[in-house]
Image 1 (tube, rainbow, N blue to C red):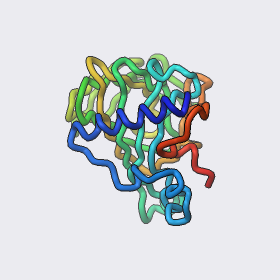
Image 2: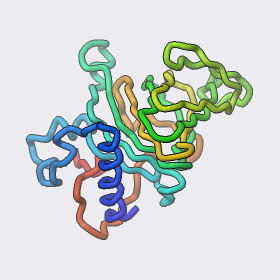
Image 3: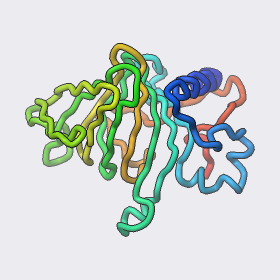
Length: 223
């Protein structure tokens, strides 16, 4: 992706989020020099901030996701079972834009339709080795009610609805009808190591620096 494209996506995404009455934290608007400064060490260490990905495929409109991580704990706390064990993101899935099939080894997450179009989630259960089971049904909690779909079945979440996905559950998702604002509440998030994709793709974008960044991405953080 070109940096100029990322700058535009950030501006458009921020306006979309504000359109639903959701305001990002102050550090979202810090200039690159301030995010790179010692005072922002905790922000960088926790992977907080902007994350625009095309999964390294160069087809953002077809396969991509807009994310902003607002809070995140540490894996050390998660291992001990005490401290900040949670994370939160706000995301945007554009209409018919695929977030490809993947699972997490550690993270459990609630994916919440915060507004806009329907959020469609394709689900598979894992087999004994953690791979996709092409035959097993998948049962997941949706706002306190258990729902079951067949292998590769689709959940359609209207605004206000959510699903809880435990580690190992395979899922892909996209917006239907209109762009969708998505919330994610989860255990500690580590996007560098805890994403297992069905296809051999990357988690972050390869960036062509055609202009200066307006805001750094989490993948830009040196430390």
